[in-house]
Length: 359
Image (cartoon, rainbow, N blue to C red; front, side, top):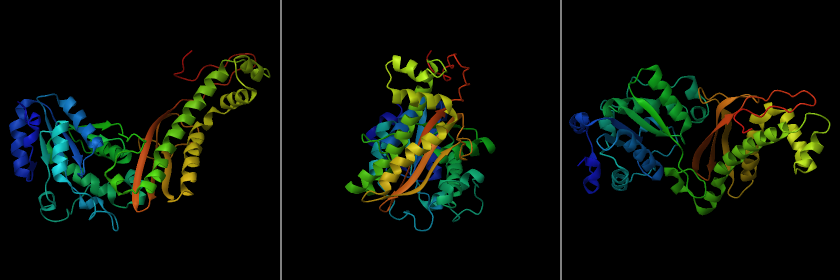
Protein backbone atom coordinates (compact mmCIF):
# COMPACT_ATOMS: atom_id res chain seq x y z
CA UNK A 1 0.00 0.00 0.00
CA UNK A 2 1.43 3.41 -0.95
CA UNK A 3 1.66 5.95 1.80
CA UNK A 4 -0.96 8.31 0.36
CA UNK A 5 -3.71 5.78 1.12
CA UNK A 6 -2.84 5.87 4.82
CA UNK A 7 -4.76 9.11 5.33
CA UNK A 8 -5.15 8.88 9.07
CA UNK A 9 -1.41 8.72 9.72
CA UNK A 10 -0.03 11.59 7.64
CA UNK A 11 2.31 13.65 9.81
CA UNK A 12 4.24 16.80 8.98
CA UNK A 13 7.82 16.48 7.74
CA UNK A 14 9.76 19.20 9.51
CA UNK A 15 13.38 18.86 8.38
CA UNK A 16 15.25 18.64 5.11
CA UNK A 17 16.96 15.48 6.30
CA UNK A 18 13.64 13.74 6.96
CA UNK A 19 12.28 14.84 3.60
CA UNK A 20 15.41 13.63 1.83
CA UNK A 21 15.06 10.21 3.46
CA UNK A 22 11.44 9.92 2.33
CA UNK A 23 12.26 10.95 -1.23
CA UNK A 24 15.22 8.57 -1.42
CA UNK A 25 13.02 5.69 -0.27
CA UNK A 26 10.32 6.67 -2.76
CA UNK A 27 12.70 7.03 -5.74
CA UNK A 28 12.32 3.46 -7.03
CA UNK A 29 8.52 3.78 -7.02
CA UNK A 30 8.18 6.09 -9.98
CA UNK A 31 7.52 9.75 -10.78
CA UNK A 32 7.41 12.50 -8.17
CA UNK A 33 5.42 15.74 -7.99
CA UNK A 34 5.17 18.73 -5.70
CA UNK A 35 2.39 21.18 -4.83
CA UNK A 36 3.72 24.30 -3.09
CA UNK A 37 1.42 26.16 -0.72
CA UNK A 38 1.52 28.61 2.16
CA UNK A 39 -1.05 26.55 4.04
CA UNK A 40 -4.69 27.30 4.86
CA UNK A 41 -5.52 24.66 2.28
CA UNK A 42 -8.87 24.76 0.49
CA UNK A 43 -10.39 22.90 -2.43
CA UNK A 44 -8.26 24.85 -4.88
CA UNK A 45 -5.16 23.35 -3.28
CA UNK A 46 -6.82 19.95 -3.10
CA UNK A 47 -7.49 20.15 -6.84
CA UNK A 48 -3.76 20.69 -7.41
CA UNK A 49 -2.90 17.68 -5.24
CA UNK A 50 -5.41 15.50 -7.06
CA UNK A 51 -3.96 16.61 -10.40
CA UNK A 52 -0.47 15.76 -9.15
CA UNK A 53 -1.64 12.35 -7.97
CA UNK A 54 -3.19 11.56 -11.36
CA UNK A 55 0.01 12.70 -13.04
CA UNK A 56 2.36 10.43 -11.09
CA UNK A 57 -0.06 7.51 -10.74
CA UNK A 58 -0.69 5.33 -7.71
CA UNK A 59 2.96 4.39 -7.32
CA UNK A 60 4.35 7.90 -7.63
CA UNK A 61 5.14 10.26 -4.77
CA UNK A 62 3.38 13.59 -4.14
CA UNK A 63 4.82 16.14 -1.74
CA UNK A 64 2.82 19.13 -0.51
CA UNK A 65 4.84 21.97 0.97
CA UNK A 66 3.36 24.25 3.62
CA UNK A 67 5.56 27.26 4.21
CA UNK A 68 4.62 30.91 4.78
CA UNK A 69 7.56 32.52 3.01
CA UNK A 70 8.56 35.82 4.65
CA UNK A 71 10.59 36.90 1.61
CA UNK A 72 7.50 37.49 -0.50
CA UNK A 73 5.66 39.72 1.99
CA UNK A 74 6.29 43.43 1.84
CA UNK A 75 5.96 46.09 4.52
CA UNK A 76 2.37 46.36 5.75
CA UNK A 77 1.29 43.06 4.20
CA UNK A 78 -0.42 40.27 6.10
CA UNK A 79 2.50 37.99 7.07
CA UNK A 80 1.59 37.96 10.76
CA UNK A 81 -2.11 37.38 10.24
CA UNK A 82 -1.75 34.92 7.37
CA UNK A 83 -3.72 31.86 8.55
CA UNK A 84 -1.75 28.91 9.94
CA UNK A 85 -3.93 25.78 10.04
CA UNK A 86 -1.48 22.89 9.81
CA UNK A 87 -3.68 20.18 11.38
CA UNK A 88 -6.47 20.93 8.91
CA UNK A 89 -3.93 21.18 6.08
CA UNK A 90 -2.63 17.69 6.83
CA UNK A 91 -6.15 16.29 6.55
CA UNK A 92 -6.86 18.09 3.26
CA UNK A 93 -3.54 17.01 1.75
CA UNK A 94 -3.96 13.39 2.81
CA UNK A 95 -7.52 13.18 1.53
CA UNK A 96 -6.46 14.61 -1.84
CA UNK A 97 -3.69 12.03 -2.22
CA UNK A 98 -0.46 13.49 -0.84
CA UNK A 99 2.29 11.20 0.42
CA UNK A 100 4.10 13.83 2.49
CA UNK A 101 3.55 17.34 3.81
CA UNK A 102 6.80 19.23 4.16
CA UNK A 103 6.12 21.96 6.74
CA UNK A 104 9.49 23.41 7.72
CA UNK A 105 10.17 26.38 9.93
CA UNK A 106 11.82 29.54 8.63
CA UNK A 107 15.18 28.50 10.12
CA UNK A 108 15.03 25.21 8.21
CA UNK A 109 14.44 26.90 4.86
CA UNK A 110 16.80 29.83 5.53
CA UNK A 111 19.29 28.38 8.03
CA UNK A 112 21.69 31.32 7.72
CA UNK A 113 19.00 33.96 7.89
CA UNK A 114 17.70 35.75 4.81
CA UNK A 115 19.64 34.51 1.77
CA UNK A 116 22.27 36.81 0.34
CA UNK A 117 21.80 35.35 -3.15
CA UNK A 118 18.28 35.42 -4.57
CA UNK A 119 16.42 34.82 -7.81
CA UNK A 120 15.52 38.05 -9.62
CA UNK A 121 12.24 38.04 -11.50
CA UNK A 122 13.40 40.46 -14.20
CA UNK A 123 11.17 42.83 -16.20
CA UNK A 124 8.06 40.61 -16.01
CA UNK A 125 8.34 40.66 -12.24
CA UNK A 126 8.08 44.46 -12.18
CA UNK A 127 4.66 44.57 -13.86
CA UNK A 128 1.15 44.34 -12.34
CA UNK A 129 1.61 42.38 -9.10
CA UNK A 130 5.31 43.23 -9.12
CA UNK A 131 4.56 46.95 -9.37
CA UNK A 132 1.96 46.72 -6.61
CA UNK A 133 4.19 44.55 -4.40
CA UNK A 134 7.87 45.42 -5.01
CA UNK A 135 10.18 42.48 -4.36
CA UNK A 136 7.31 39.99 -4.06
CA UNK A 137 8.27 37.93 -7.08
CA UNK A 138 11.97 37.85 -6.19
CA UNK A 139 11.04 36.34 -2.83
CA UNK A 140 8.57 33.93 -4.43
CA UNK A 141 11.02 32.65 -7.05
CA UNK A 142 13.77 32.28 -4.47
CA UNK A 143 11.68 29.99 -2.27
CA UNK A 144 10.26 28.08 -5.25
CA UNK A 145 13.81 27.43 -6.48
CA UNK A 146 14.85 26.19 -3.03
CA UNK A 147 11.79 23.96 -2.69
CA UNK A 148 12.30 22.50 -6.16
CA UNK A 149 15.81 21.50 -5.11
CA UNK A 150 14.61 20.08 -1.79
CA UNK A 151 11.59 18.15 -3.13
CA UNK A 152 13.27 16.92 -6.37
CA UNK A 153 10.04 16.62 -8.40
CA UNK A 154 9.54 15.53 -11.97
CA UNK A 155 6.56 17.91 -12.11
CA UNK A 156 5.38 20.88 -10.06
CA UNK A 157 1.74 22.00 -9.99
CA UNK A 158 0.57 25.60 -9.63
CA UNK A 159 -2.82 27.27 -9.92
CA UNK A 160 -3.78 29.52 -12.83
CA UNK A 161 -5.32 31.97 -10.32
CA UNK A 162 -1.81 33.27 -9.68
CA UNK A 163 -1.20 33.65 -13.41
CA UNK A 164 1.78 35.99 -13.24
CA UNK A 165 3.42 33.78 -10.63
CA UNK A 166 2.89 30.74 -12.86
CA UNK A 167 4.35 32.55 -15.88
CA UNK A 168 7.43 33.59 -13.90
CA UNK A 169 8.01 30.10 -12.52
CA UNK A 170 7.81 28.69 -16.04
CA UNK A 171 10.27 31.33 -17.21
CA UNK A 172 12.66 30.59 -14.34
CA UNK A 173 12.54 26.84 -15.03
CA UNK A 174 13.25 27.45 -18.71
CA UNK A 175 15.92 30.14 -18.30
CA UNK A 176 17.80 28.36 -15.50
CA UNK A 177 17.37 24.80 -16.86
CA UNK A 178 15.43 23.33 -13.96
CA UNK A 179 14.74 19.68 -14.86
CA UNK A 180 11.07 19.88 -13.93
CA UNK A 181 7.75 20.13 -15.77
CA UNK A 182 5.70 23.11 -14.61
CA UNK A 183 1.98 22.30 -14.81
CA UNK A 184 -0.75 24.93 -14.56
CA UNK A 185 -4.18 23.97 -13.21
CA UNK A 186 -7.34 26.02 -13.94
CA UNK A 187 -8.70 28.30 -11.22
CA UNK A 188 -11.19 26.72 -8.83
CA UNK A 189 -14.16 28.92 -7.98
CA UNK A 190 -16.80 28.94 -5.28
CA UNK A 191 -20.43 28.48 -6.38
CA UNK A 192 -20.93 32.26 -6.55
CA UNK A 193 -17.93 32.66 -8.86
CA UNK A 194 -15.38 34.03 -6.39
CA UNK A 195 -11.97 32.47 -6.96
CA UNK A 196 -10.95 30.28 -4.04
CA UNK A 197 -8.35 32.00 -1.88
CA UNK A 198 -7.11 31.69 1.67
CA UNK A 199 -7.85 35.41 2.01
CA UNK A 200 -11.58 35.00 1.30
CA UNK A 201 -12.09 34.19 4.98
CA UNK A 202 -11.25 37.81 5.83
CA UNK A 203 -14.28 39.15 3.91
CA UNK A 204 -17.43 40.17 5.76
CA UNK A 205 -20.75 39.32 4.09
CA UNK A 206 -21.13 42.83 2.57
CA UNK A 207 -17.48 42.82 1.45
CA UNK A 208 -17.96 39.46 -0.20
CA UNK A 209 -20.90 40.81 -2.21
CA UNK A 210 -18.70 43.60 -3.50
CA UNK A 211 -15.80 41.20 -4.15
CA UNK A 212 -17.96 39.21 -6.57
CA UNK A 213 -17.38 42.06 -9.03
CA UNK A 214 -13.93 40.60 -9.76
CA UNK A 215 -15.23 37.39 -11.29
CA UNK A 216 -18.29 39.18 -12.72
CA UNK A 217 -15.97 41.55 -14.61
CA UNK A 218 -14.00 38.64 -16.04
CA UNK A 219 -17.12 36.79 -17.11
CA UNK A 220 -18.59 39.93 -18.68
CA UNK A 221 -15.40 40.34 -20.70
CA UNK A 222 -15.46 36.70 -21.78
CA UNK A 223 -19.08 37.00 -22.85
CA UNK A 224 -18.38 40.23 -24.75
CA UNK A 225 -15.59 38.51 -26.67
CA UNK A 226 -17.80 35.54 -27.52
CA UNK A 227 -20.56 37.88 -28.67
CA UNK A 228 -18.11 39.88 -30.76
CA UNK A 229 -17.09 36.79 -32.71
CA UNK A 230 -20.63 35.43 -32.92
CA UNK A 231 -21.77 38.74 -34.41
CA UNK A 232 -18.91 38.71 -36.88
CA UNK A 233 -19.69 35.17 -37.99
CA UNK A 234 -23.38 35.90 -38.45
CA UNK A 235 -22.63 39.16 -40.24
CA UNK A 236 -20.43 37.23 -42.63
CA UNK A 237 -23.39 35.05 -43.61
CA UNK A 238 -25.10 38.04 -45.27
CA UNK A 239 -24.00 39.82 -48.50
CA UNK A 240 -21.63 42.73 -47.88
CA UNK A 241 -23.76 45.41 -49.47
CA UNK A 242 -26.28 48.12 -48.66
CA UNK A 243 -28.81 45.31 -48.23
CA UNK A 244 -26.89 43.75 -45.31
CA UNK A 245 -29.42 44.88 -42.69
CA UNK A 246 -32.39 43.63 -44.71
CA UNK A 247 -30.69 40.32 -45.41
CA UNK A 248 -29.90 39.80 -41.74
CA UNK A 249 -33.44 40.77 -40.80
CA UNK A 250 -34.71 38.01 -43.08
CA UNK A 251 -32.64 35.62 -41.00
CA UNK A 252 -34.80 36.59 -38.02
CA UNK A 253 -32.73 39.51 -36.70
CA UNK A 254 -34.02 42.90 -35.63
CA UNK A 255 -32.69 46.01 -37.37
CA UNK A 256 -30.70 46.94 -34.27
CA UNK A 257 -29.09 43.52 -34.16
CA UNK A 258 -28.36 43.69 -37.87
CA UNK A 259 -26.62 47.02 -37.38
CA UNK A 260 -24.58 45.48 -34.54
CA UNK A 261 -23.55 42.64 -36.83
CA UNK A 262 -22.41 45.12 -39.44
CA UNK A 263 -20.33 46.95 -36.85
CA UNK A 264 -18.79 43.69 -35.65
CA UNK A 265 -17.81 42.78 -39.20
CA UNK A 266 -16.52 46.25 -40.02
CA UNK A 267 -14.28 46.69 -36.94
CA UNK A 268 -13.14 43.25 -35.73
CA UNK A 269 -9.81 44.68 -34.63
CA UNK A 270 -11.46 46.30 -31.59
CA UNK A 271 -12.10 43.01 -29.78
CA UNK A 272 -9.42 43.58 -27.13
CA UNK A 273 -10.71 47.08 -26.42
CA UNK A 274 -14.28 45.76 -26.17
CA UNK A 275 -13.13 43.17 -23.63
CA UNK A 276 -11.44 45.82 -21.49
CA UNK A 277 -14.52 48.04 -21.65
CA UNK A 278 -16.87 45.23 -20.60
CA UNK A 279 -14.77 44.42 -17.54
CA UNK A 280 -14.25 48.06 -16.67
CA UNK A 281 -18.01 48.73 -16.68
CA UNK A 282 -18.62 46.06 -14.01
CA UNK A 283 -15.75 47.31 -11.87
CA UNK A 284 -16.91 50.91 -12.11
CA UNK A 285 -20.25 49.91 -10.61
CA UNK A 286 -18.44 48.08 -7.80
CA UNK A 287 -16.34 51.16 -7.08
CA UNK A 288 -19.59 52.95 -6.26
CA UNK A 289 -20.87 50.13 -4.02
CA UNK A 290 -20.90 50.08 -0.22
CA UNK A 291 -18.42 48.84 0.77
CA UNK A 292 -16.54 50.00 -2.30
CA UNK A 293 -14.12 48.05 -4.41
CA UNK A 294 -10.75 49.80 -4.78
CA UNK A 295 -9.14 48.70 -8.03
CA UNK A 296 -5.37 48.21 -8.17
CA UNK A 297 -5.22 47.28 -11.83
CA UNK A 298 -7.15 45.85 -14.76
CA UNK A 299 -4.93 44.62 -17.59
CA UNK A 300 -5.24 42.50 -20.72
CA UNK A 301 -1.78 41.05 -21.16
CA UNK A 302 0.32 38.74 -23.28
CA UNK A 303 0.92 35.58 -21.20
CA UNK A 304 4.52 35.42 -22.44
CA UNK A 305 5.67 38.63 -20.73
CA UNK A 306 2.59 40.27 -19.12
CA UNK A 307 2.78 43.37 -21.29
CA UNK A 308 -0.50 45.02 -22.31
CA UNK A 309 -1.83 43.79 -25.67
CA UNK A 310 -2.98 46.17 -28.42
CA UNK A 311 -6.58 46.52 -29.53
CA UNK A 312 -6.00 44.36 -32.61
CA UNK A 313 -4.30 41.55 -30.66
CA UNK A 314 -4.58 38.03 -32.05
CA UNK A 315 -3.67 34.96 -30.00
CA UNK A 316 -3.79 34.10 -26.30
CA UNK A 317 -4.14 36.75 -23.62
CA UNK A 318 -4.88 36.96 -19.91
CA UNK A 319 -7.34 39.43 -18.44
CA UNK A 320 -5.96 40.09 -14.96
CA UNK A 321 -7.14 42.28 -12.12
CA UNK A 322 -6.46 43.06 -8.49
CA UNK A 323 -8.54 45.02 -6.02
CA UNK A 324 -9.08 45.68 -2.35
CA UNK A 325 -12.36 45.26 -0.55
CA UNK A 326 -12.07 46.51 3.00
CA UNK A 327 -8.62 45.42 4.17
CA UNK A 328 -8.48 42.35 1.92
CA UNK A 329 -6.60 42.35 -1.38
CA UNK A 330 -7.80 39.87 -4.00
CA UNK A 331 -6.58 38.89 -7.45
CA UNK A 332 -8.24 37.03 -10.30
CA UNK A 333 -7.73 36.43 -14.00
CA UNK A 334 -9.16 34.65 -17.01
CA UNK A 335 -7.30 33.29 -20.07
CA UNK A 336 -8.82 34.43 -23.37
CA UNK A 337 -8.14 33.63 -27.02
CA UNK A 338 -8.36 36.33 -29.70
CA UNK A 339 -8.88 35.44 -33.33
CA UNK A 340 -7.29 37.31 -36.19
CA UNK A 341 -9.21 40.03 -38.00
CA UNK A 342 -11.57 38.72 -40.65
CA UNK A 343 -10.69 39.79 -44.22
CA UNK A 344 -13.04 42.41 -45.67
CA UNK A 345 -15.57 41.06 -48.18
CA UNK A 346 -16.11 42.65 -51.58
CA UNK A 347 -19.55 44.06 -52.30
CA UNK A 348 -21.96 41.28 -53.09
CA UNK A 349 -19.81 38.53 -51.56
CA UNK A 350 -20.18 36.82 -48.21
CA UNK A 351 -17.39 37.60 -45.76
CA UNK A 352 -15.48 34.52 -44.61
CA UNK A 353 -16.28 33.16 -41.17
CA UNK A 354 -13.95 33.97 -38.29
CA UNK A 355 -11.17 31.42 -37.70
CA UNK A 356 -12.42 28.46 -35.72
CA UNK A 357 -16.06 29.29 -36.36
CA UNK A 358 -18.42 26.64 -37.64
CA UNK A 359 -19.41 26.93 -41.28
